[in-house]
Length: 123
Image (cartoon, rainbow, N blue to C red; front, side, top):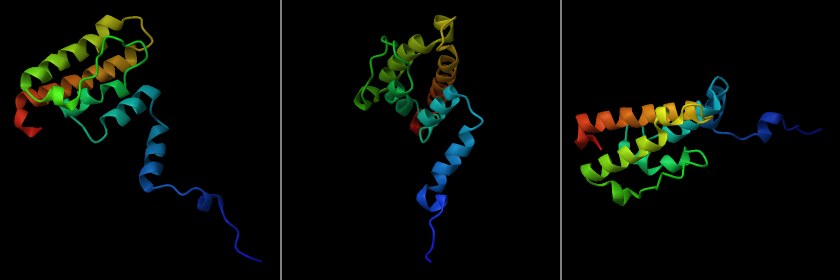
């Protein structure tokens, strides 16, 4: 007679992973994608623009991913922010199946850019 392994022993997960799974039960797939994209870079316009390709859908061909070196000056940030807004603007995607995701991406980018404009030294 020995000890029997339980299902819990076989599923070695971190508390963060379990918490993420629990929170995901009440979220839509789009909300999960946005949460994963913004996690750790909340309101950081450079980081959000630098990782925008991770949240965009197939067919968003107008977006050319900038490197972090392309996001150093205020003018560069403004240029790439505006390009990103053209790709994800909800008015451009009316009737598209990507509209809910585009609205969330657009909102996150707007919030981050507003924060950056109010205090560019915080980045």
